[in-house]
Each structure stands twice: as structure tokens, then as C-alpha cells.
Amino acid sequence: QPVIGVLALQGDVREHLVALAECDVLARPVRRPEELAEVHGLVLPGGESTTMSRLLETFELLEPLRERLRAGMSAYGSCAGMILLATKALDARPDQHQLGAIDMVVRRNAFGRQVDSFEADLDFTGLPGAPLHAVFIRAPWVESVGAGVEVLATIPDRPEAGAAAGRIVAVRQGQALATSFHPELTGDGRVHRLFVEIVRAS
Ligand code: GLN
Image (cartoon, rainbow, N blue to C red; front, side, top):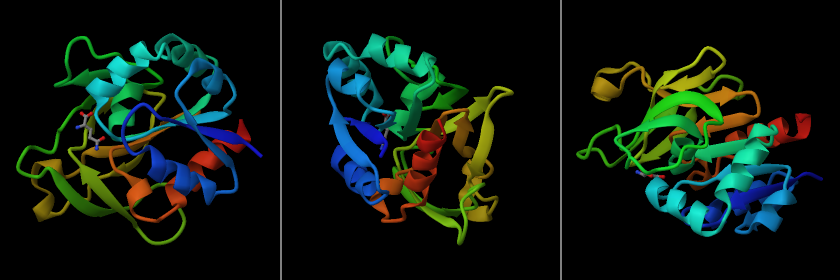
């Protein structure tokens, strides 16, 4: 059985552990380098990316995590986790660390202050069944992607989407997956199962 860690410094840790436990894997919180060394894949949860970036340093996880990602460990970042996995984050503090596992530029809090939180039904490439109901909370969007990045979902082009229409909100590059939204909050296990498949295939 694969062992999948959830970076447990801050944010939606418990919800991801629960969602993963339903996917027939061993799910564990990761706070220390020794714990990171034991997992086959890692979820970087939503929360606050500036805080998580600082805590990665404090807990001496930043360099070990960079190394594992360079070596091809599977990773899934949701919301703040997506921001950390990017090569570059706009509207972030200049000292925020970027893990660079996905060749993309993201924009923090991109959907604007007036819509702190919203929901949308997404067509998500590779997920069977109905559109995916996605919850966005002070979410980033993906501003641009490099040639090796597969776009899996965008905000549907409807009048109510306004300036957000067409924005990229889910991507994959090799072993790394990221979503702007929070599948751990909706009880729909499909995104977690997709990540577990990526881990199993590696
Ligand atoms: N706005 C947060 C950040 O910039 C992300 C929000 C979230 O993860 N729900 O890190």
C-alpha cells in the first residue's frame, strides 16, 4: 500500500487525511524530515501560503522537500499548496519560497476581495462522471503555464464568471498535480483518487 503524506504545518490537514484514508492508502501527517523520507507522495493542503512557506523553513523541511520533488516524488497542491508548487507567485511576499515542481505562474487571491469564496462546476480532464463541484476560498488562479504542463480544468465561460472565465484552476506536470480549489471539503473523492493513481504509477 502506498504511503501518502499530508504536509501538516498549517491548513486543511485533517480533511486531506480523511479523504486519502478513503482511497485505500496509508495517510500520514508530515512535519519532520524523517517523516517526509517515508512517504511515496505528498499533499500540500490549502491554508495560507506565506505562513506555510515560513514554517517549511522553521521545520527544516524546505530543502528536503525540494530534493524529493527534484527526484520525482508525486505531489498534489491545493490552493495554498498550488501556490507553493509553482515556479512563481504574483501578489505574494517577495521572500515567499517557491518549490518549482510545476512550471507555472500563479496569482494569489486572484478572484478578488469581493468574492472571497465561491463554487463552480468544472469539466475536469480525466475525471469520469459528472462535472466536479469545486469550492474556491481566497483561491489563486494559474496565470500562465510552460509547455510541459497539462491544463485539466478552467473556470467555465459563463456571464456570471466575469473576468474569471477561462482561468486555469487545475494542472498537472508529470508527477505533480495542483488545483486552485479544495476537493477535501466536498466529499467527492475523485481528485484524491486521481492523485493516488499518480502515486501508484510511479
Ligand atoms: N489565499 C491563501 C494564500 O495565499 C490561499 C487560500 C487557501 O488555501 N484556501 O495562501
